[in-house]
Length: 419
Ligand code: EPZ
View 1 (cartoon, rainbow, N blue to C red):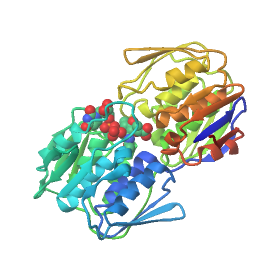
View 2 (tube, rainbow, N blue to C red):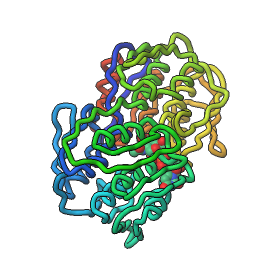
View 3 (cartoon, helix red, strand yellow):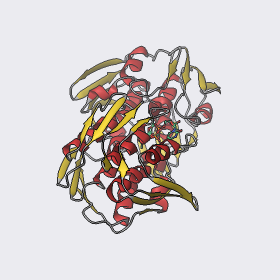
C-alpha cells in the first residue's frame, strides 16, 4: 500500500508550470472519438483519469500513444461500441462516450460512469437530453443501452448548468441534423475548450461560455492538433499550499481568465495575487483572514472543486468561516480527517462552520476523493511534524507529479510503501 509522508512547516517558494487541465482534457478525449482521423492533444496531463479514458478508446479499436507532452488518438477505425469495464466505471468522464458514439454511429452500450464519491452522480440530465434529440435509451442489466437512427437538433433546457450534460449534448450535436440549442448551459472554461477544439474540427458552435450554446455543422475528418488549457483547479490547489505555508509561488498558466471566482476569494483571505496573461503569482505575508461566508457555485462563482482545499486553509485562518457546498451533496469528507489534526469544524445542512486554530498537528489521514486528498496534503504542509495520507491513488487521478512539484517549491513530501 502506498502513502504520502508529509513534513510540514516549510515555506513554498518558486516557479511552477501548471499541468494541463484534467476537466478540459477529458471531454477533448471523448471528442477525438468523433474524428475518423488523428487528434493530437498537447499539454495533456499524465494522470490516471486520462489513462482510464484512453484505455476505453483502445478497447474499442482506437490507436492511442503518447508523444512527449501530447496524446495522439487515431479513431479512424473502431470495432466496438461497448464502453465496459473497470476503466469506464471508475471515471466520470466515460459518460461522454455516450454522446460521441451516438453521434458517430448511433449505438452505444455503457457501464454507468464512476467518479469521486461526492454525491449520487446521476446521469438523468444526460439521458433526458439525448432522448429529446431522438435517441432510444434504456437501462438493461445495469447498463445504459443507446440507439439512434439519426439524432435531430432541438432546444434543450437543462434543469441545472451541468458541466457533463452540457458536454454530452455538444458531442451528440456533432451528429445531429439541424441546430441544437442548449439553454441553461454550463459556462465553465472547460466547455469553451471543448467548443474551441470542435470548431477546429469543422463544427460551428456559438455561445460557448454563455448560458445559451448553439451547435450546428458536423466535424470534418482531418488531423487536428489542440493544446489544452492549464488546470485552474491545480493552480488554485498549489496557491492554497502557498497560503498555509506563508509562501510565494509563481504559477505558469495559460487562460488565466479561468481563475475567475478563485482569485476573488484568495484576495478576500488577504493573499497577494498578481497575474498576467500567462502567470499567476500568489504570496502570503500574514496569517490568512477568515471568510464569514463563501458558497460554491457554477462558473463564474467559486468552484466546488476548490472547496476542500479552501477548508484546509480556513482551518488555520484568523477567525471563523462558513463554507456552503451547493453543487454536491456529500463533499465534506475531509472534515473528520482535519478534526484528527486539531481543526475546529462542524457541519450542518450543507454548511461547514470553521473556527480557525493557530496550527494543525500532523496525523494519519485517509483520502476519500481527489480534491479532498489534495486538501489533506495542504493541511499536512501547514502543520508541524509528520502527516501521513493514505490512499494517494485518489490524488493521482487529477494531479500530475504533485509531490515532485511541492518538493521543487521547498516542501517535503514523499511517496512511500507500507506493508
Ligand atoms: C464535472 O463533473 C467535473 N468533472 C467535476 O470535477 C466538477 O466538480 C463538476 O463538473 C462541477 O463543476 C469532470 O469534468 C470530469 P455536473 P460533472 O454534471 O459533470 C447533478 C473533480 O474533482 N447532476 O456539473 O459530473 C450532480 O449530481 C471533479 O475534478 C444531476 O443531478 O458535474 C451535481 O449535483 C469532481 N444529474 C450537479 O448536477 C445529471 O445528469 C453538478 O454536476 C448530472 C448532474
